[in-house]
Image 1 (cartoon, rainbow, N blue to C red):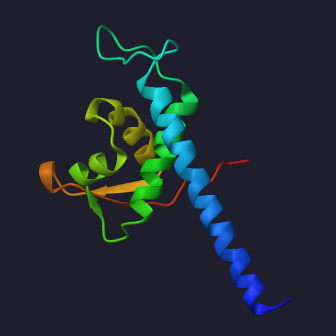
Image 2 (spheres, rainbow, N blue to C red):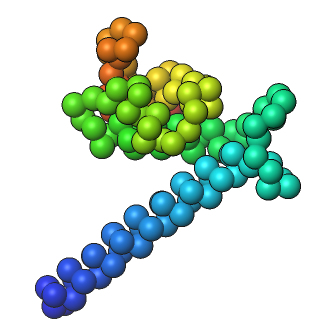
Length: 122
């Protein structure tokens, strides 16, 4: 095949994948922040979150950490996620326990790094 053609296909594929991931991320964020009627979840007790949504946030946290191999602060991570701290605490704990990310430091000096996922036994 022509080298120019390969480069063109590769660029189109990478753009498609990036757009697809952005669309899925946006859709999951909207689904997480609104109920079935489309209203904002700002009043009263929050409903239980879907495991799929939590897993999507865990994957997003791991992806952001992987983009910052020198580490990312908690505040910067929350800013890039675009979610409130209360909605990130459980996914953050799951990401740490599954070793998708690592933590170093204390209090405001805490930094998060890409981790190594646990292998399933068996």
